Length: 216
Image (cartoon, rainbow, N blue to C red; front, side):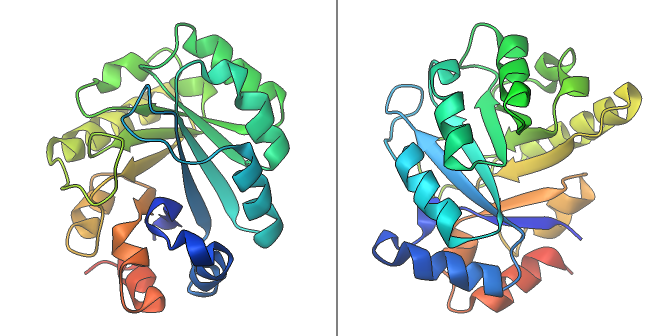
């Protein structure tokens, strides 16, 4: 059964505390928080102060996804704010191994994300040192995009790499994930499903999360 991580990018920010409480009651285990800087991706979202407020509102695992340049300058702030997992982009920094070490030195789990056009091979030399490998199945920046199908092949490749390396990293997928494709996504080896629109734009959070957890 996959871990479901609703993405607050699609939540109603006027009622964010209520939204978080609702998905927690509906069975979500993680909460996915997209941090965007308007440089690495064409959108601007939230910062450490909002993450700190979210931390006070929930006991869910806070899965903080930094879609930003110069992540090293901000990792400590997000760690202090209460992130449990801090994920950076392979494409966004010059010294990925150093960034992973920094995250772990702060007592947090480290993740690395790759964009749709980035190959799984780029993670080979860090895969044993990370806790989470995130495959972007849309081009990052905005919610509600269509799923990019070659992401399934990437998940299969990544799962094999993890097995061969002896890594314990989980595979996460983010973008266009919903009840219609979650079955094949999980079958490809994905452990964590990030779902924004599929959860927060649904009429029933309990039903939406149940379908993601137990695809037919």
